Amino acid sequence: MTIVVTVALVVLAAACVVAIALYAIGREVVLLEARVQPAVFELEEAIEFIADRLPDEVTARVSHDDVRWVLKADADVLEEATADAVAAGDDDEVIDENGAVGRVLERASGQRPDLADEDVVAILDARLEYLEAIGAIGTEASLGDDI
Image (cartoon, rainbow, N blue to C red; front, side):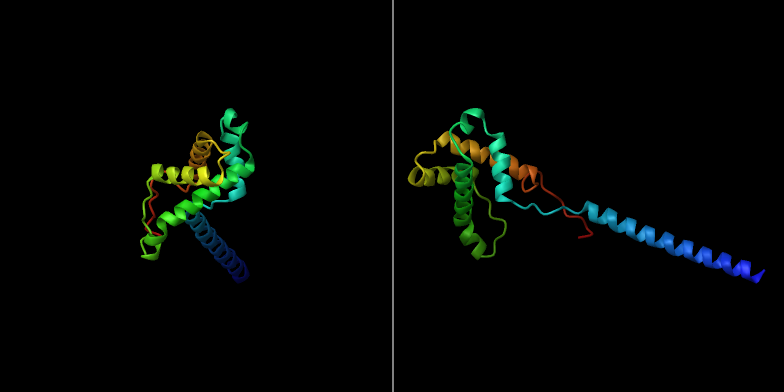
């Protein structure tokens, strides 16, 4: 009789351990699932995404290299516009989108006069779609209390 009781207690203890482990793993999965994944800008992925979404009349005039140049010029303009704020420790610098587009257009007219203004603007508009798709921009995300 004592062997049956011992076996029953061992099985009950093992079931409790498994149940606790499953609960803990399940809780962590739910917590990790709720966390916001960082938005990572992948240049080659962005070029493909943007090229696929450009209007037909724009794709007839621009190449993937043109898209790459506009994206890099935009990144350079953004870096230049925020350099002072970042150096001062201000991470919340807001950039005027129209001013940024104007600066990219100005750079394009000097370095890439073959790019039409409307092509540059179309690329930058499609870039916004890419940033929304990867979650880099959009509605303000709230950080949970668990982070």
